[in-house]
Amino acid sequence: MTVRRQAELGANLAAVRARIAAACGDVGRDPAEVTLIVVTKFFPASDVRLLSGLGVHDMGESRDQEAGPKFAEVRADTSGLRLHFIGQVQSNKAASVARYADVVHTVDRPKLVAALERGAERAGRALDVLVQVDLDRPDPTRSAPDGAQLPAEPGRPESHRGGVASTHALDLAEAVAACAHLRLAGVMAVAPLHEDPDPAFARLARTAAAVRARFPDAVWISAGMSGDLEAAVRHGATHLRVGTAILGSRPPLR
Image (tube, rainbow, N blue to C red; front, side):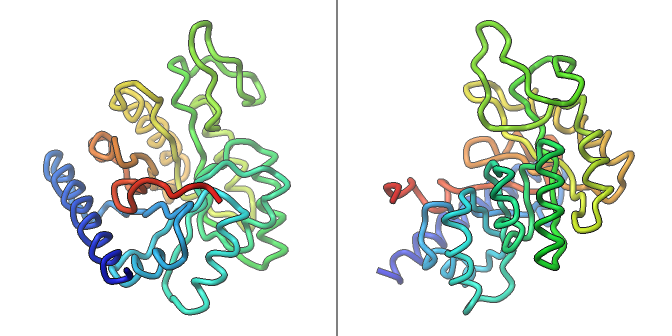
């Protein structure tokens, strides 16, 4: 079973890497500029080990209750892994996430910045973090003064995936940059459901440029998943979060 699974993962991984290379070639980018994060949520530690053997070093998880134990187990016998936490983080879980994650992609409010800073300080580590931008709102001026989420526009579904309005991304970046144990790496977003991802990723690219103009080291753009990675590459994504195209359909939730 392990040999068959390794062959399956290897073939899927090669296909995704070929897609990335083709997408980069279409816009004159070097594929080496793009980091593939394989999203291993709901999949066993054995898959993480197999992926590591296939040359994958960046893994993505979204549930604290799963990620913590899984990576404590895997890191005991696998070196060189970088764990990206890509799920929404409740403030009361921030200290736990800060103990094992290397990167947190979903920072979307000042309260979470403060909680991650406290957690990282207590753990004696530094975290790379990204400001999550909400691309579900087409009008970036629709935001509360404190950066809080506003209700969806009439006829438009409410977003439950988190993110700060693009007009407040720089404010949140400032809050991260002021922390001693957090490093501002860049921005992250998820394209709106059932819409053309290109306009959304173009908006993210503009937000990323504004953040980078103030913080030159914040060069990451985390965008693109199994179904829209080509569009993300077209708009400058540096990190792609791919799960299904490599690991297959999610196993039943335990």
